[in-house]
Amino acid sequence: MTAEEFSRCLSQDCRVAPGSHVLAAVSGGADSIALLCHLLQVSEGYPLSVSCVHVEHGIRGDASIEDMAFVRALCERRCVPFYGAHVDAPGHARAQGCGLEDAARTLRYDALYRIAREIGADAIALAHHAGDQAETVLLHAARGSDLRGLCAMRPRRGMLIRPLLACTAQELRAYLCDIGQLWREDQSNEDVRYARNRIRRDVMPALERAAPGAGAALCRLAGAAQRDEDYFAQQLDALHIRTIPLVDGIAAEREQLAGLHPALLSRMLVRMAERAGIRLQSAAAIEAIMGAIAERDAVINLGGGAHASVGGEYLCLTRAQTPEIDVQLCVPGRTDTPFGTFEVSVPKPGEAGDGRSAQRMPARLLADARVTCRREGDVMTPFGRRTPVKLKKLMIDAGIERAMRASVPVIRNKEGILFAVGLRPAENCRCAGNGKEEQMIVRFLGKWPKADVLTKNNQEE
Image 1: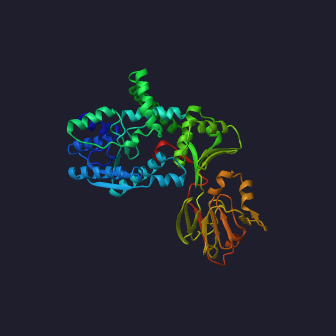
Image 2: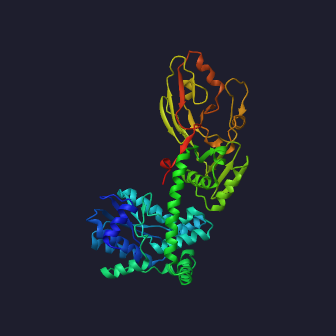
Image 3: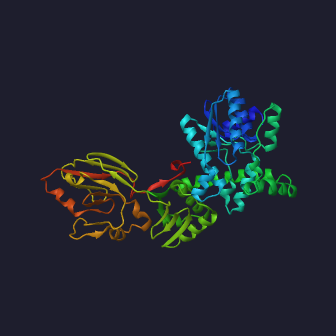
């Protein structure tokens, strides 16, 4: 790859603006050293500010430490700002019950994003090349992915850029030899305990022998899949699917989803999951959710403690843990909470609120008021009644589905519940109308139970 071709890739495929600060992730191997050298080669004319980060995973002992020293020394010679990070991948794997490869990847990306934020980098450059792309397509297909998995890696996703996807490993090594730059060999790349190493060492060579040019063909397949996925994304944007943000996930109307073509529905589910911070592990999980949408009471385990719950009206995708929300209400003033914003102020003459998103009540009740989730065993005496009722029963009677109940904001003081937003206030708010004591009105300015519109523009990368 020439300097002109690399610059064109940065500009067009990776969408890196001139003057950007790029943080290069450099392991010390040939691919990442070539990435750093290419960035430095074009940095003056492009122009770019280039920094380097090396993550030491705590796996290979002295060899790993020597890799970091090698990269640090190269950066010192080339006057490149260097940032090193040490992580404990074996310890993380034991603590989380995951594989060493997954642990290393998680900690590596955490470190990359953290350092990029600290130094104000605009992009994080990774050294994945054409061979990595072909291997990724095969791995995703073997693990049961669908067309989305065949997209493999894109030149840019969020802050991550991959400007070498059009290069082969052989071309990158030839480039380093031409400029006289040494690199380090990572012996763990020969460890056949890792699936990608088995693909690289055994499967890809056999595939090339059986069908010469197979690697390049797999890369073209990834490009075609990306093109088609971009088209489907545009179609989803035009649908304006209404969703409800939950404190532990996201919900959408079941009937609206059921009317979608399966090709759009499967992609809509992925989009919802991404926005909710849920990783859909396989195409099989997506198929299971699609099948359950026709039912009115189904719960699907998505792995990692996440669930898809289908009720009478909504599909809810929820994460493993419901956050413990307990925020003191600012009286008067505004209070930001995971549910949304609350506003407490003096009511206008005759203003009582609608009992769902706004409610007037005595100021004395709000002296120690807090905004929380529903708690096990919660009871309240609803406005207009004399006896307490379980909050759970009020939610059931109101048609709030099980997976959405944790997202109902509850205002309470030390004596009990004052107001369940979207349901009704407590009976002790009634005295707010007697005009003999200071009164306040509580307004909920958040989205619940309002619907949002999920489009490509408001989902996170």
